[in-house]
Image 1 (cartoon, rainbow over the protein chains, first blue to last red):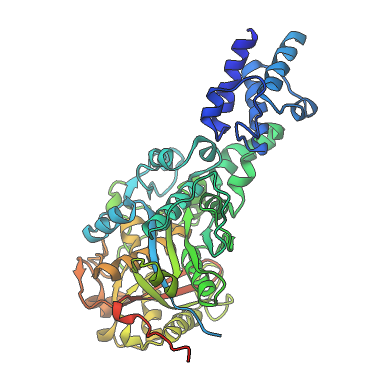
Image 2 (spheres, rainbow over the protein chains, first blue to last red; image 1 turned 120 degrees about the vertical axis):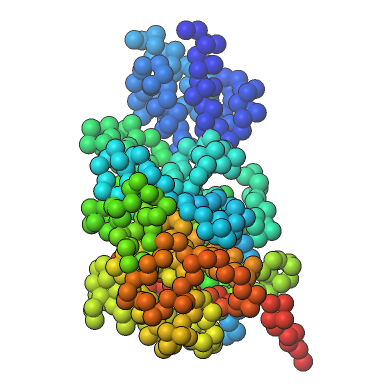
Length: 84
Length: 436
């Protein structure tokens, strides 16, 4: 799965939690989860659970804390899958 | 200190026989039952397999709430939120846009519940925790299972800045919320309060009552006949769910904005029987019931003969005859003078914490339109209240001169709540006071 495919999956995972659907449609790797996609910070827990389930990886609390943009999530997934 | 007058200017009803105040008004007039066979209760081996569940709510929720909101709303919170938004908009107010930073400091919400988010507790929290999977519970657990989850959600949906809280007084909850909302406005602490109650249809809410054998088990194949308040063949209550919320408003604020006024709240009281004098955790102290009713009527400045109708607690248990006799002794009226008696639970079952909210909304609707809805399934009046038979409303009664309805709810814990509603007439507008 390449970066583009992972990005598409991440967008699907983010969709139920974003209060800014139009920003999600046009998002890039730099898009902020909280400020631009209007995702409540508490919901990042659910985003990480969604990533774990979809990609079959385990995300530590320390790794999760570093995810603030769409790109952070994509990189975390690609790195975890590469390491597996 | 001048006490403010309080009126009902909006209603939201999510009831087993109808959702929305217009549809609910029609259902009341027609005596439509919302009690249905519940296959899930049969699968789980309940003795009682009938219940009241509001129709079409999941579809409605998609229109009212975005996916992020729905993600953390169990049935209890969903019912309360729809009823609160409906009451707000029925009152002519607009739902604030989510991106607005304006907070309405003068408006609050007291929306009670009995058992809160039992489905998330039973289906996710407990099994997940016991399996050592706490980290997999997600972020929405607390907001769905905290007792105040329903009012907390409403506070955010409507940007409320006054008191936002959830009360809990078992089956008196919804009426207690109306009492407390009324008092808050009356004493000048708020201009507007959403007040009522909600309860989910989770089998985990209803199971404990089935275990107590207080639910009807004898009409599983005839659901609409199951809820039988005041009947000799009443065999327990029918569990129900939903929400009822009233928009209470200071009279001067309501008049200034030209709001439609359903009714005025003129008297209210709550108390507890202390589990003494015949009262217990599950039975009412008759002296407390009588005091509660009398206190509410006294605050209203009315005589017992001024009460045209009673919307009773009347659940279809053995407590019904006791309740009717308590009303009679509280009001000190002869059987011939007894106000009209009716039981909304005959239509929708006992919606527990929502009951007081839905039934207070019923009183406001009846006063505004001038009718008393029929009570179903009491053709065979219980012999202990036979002397009040002429007061029992079995068919729709149109009453142009209907002016006052007393509503009471009683709950486990020996707690009582009573509200007196008065029809609003434009001639009730207070005279302008001079500032000279």
